[in-house]
Image (cartoon, rainbow, N blue to C red; front, side, top):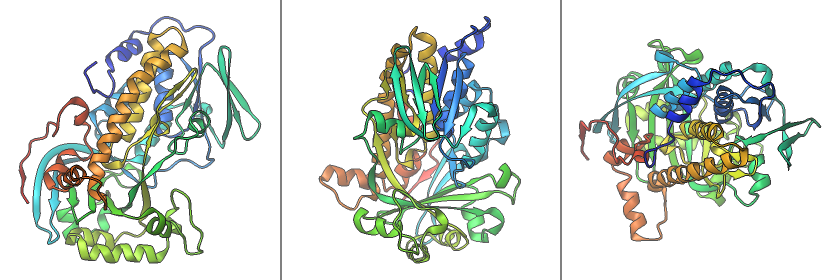
Length: 442
């Protein structure tokens, strides 16, 4: 396997393609806690190598990414193919070029970087449709895990339980599985938030439609970063005029003061970790819009004006020192949460599942397989989190050394932002990927 690669798919692909022998009467069973994309990728991959899987999701309503956009990577498309999903042209909206706009709206940087942008909801629905509905259990809150000789048992709040040979914690940043095995590992606030939103293509003013919509666009106010890109419309509508534009605006927010105020709704209740979009105080939204009028390029200002319901995402880091515990493993955001600048959360979760399936198809016993999986994925998780911190250093307001300040200054230039945001080329030893730099001037 090449050094730094997300995961080598060749061995697993061989196992999937060559498995022709009749399956044993009694399959090994995997209990997967968390029904989002990481859990579904793992379940589908384990199904492909002959495991019996069951996915347990805490919430009763169908999951939704609140319309969030996702920039895809070749690694993600490869994993989709391994589980039998071939979306082709329906994956999302192709983008050919990145642009950075100055505060006056002039283009101060261009970078050719073909990618496909899709929506969280569309990708999730593809995985959900591919997995057997009768084995996706909603309204199942995990309360306790019991490991015993030869197996593991998951106990749920409704009194039910299930025994299996393996249990996976794919239950995200607030993982109940991680809480049992690593109770001291918690998300760490990064010092800034992201304002996010989706705007219908048909609602965009002409300047935004012309200067933003075809591009992965950036604007770099001091200590902040705004970016946006096109995604499909409702129901994965890719027709011209029916798509949407997704934006993310990173802004510093002190944890004890500003963040607390942003997470406090109109009734004075302060939410923990995040706040539902409809409950964000009107004053907070108004201040955000007003600040945008002062520091953003005109097309981005127009974008904010027509955004009906922005939502707020506090930015966190999370690193687990371990991912394997005998017959229990952590994958996806339950193990590592990287700031969104890398844009690799879904691809990382997919390759966690791939590495796990590969280890289970190679090793005789579960514990040895999980140790092999952990040895591979811990290093990758740390590299992705470290890279995301570097890209987010621009949003820091205090620096402990000259080196930290210089790093932040580097990541505020159009060249660095366009060359590294939402790309995984750093895992393969490349600084600027394979895109051809057309122009980048200050």
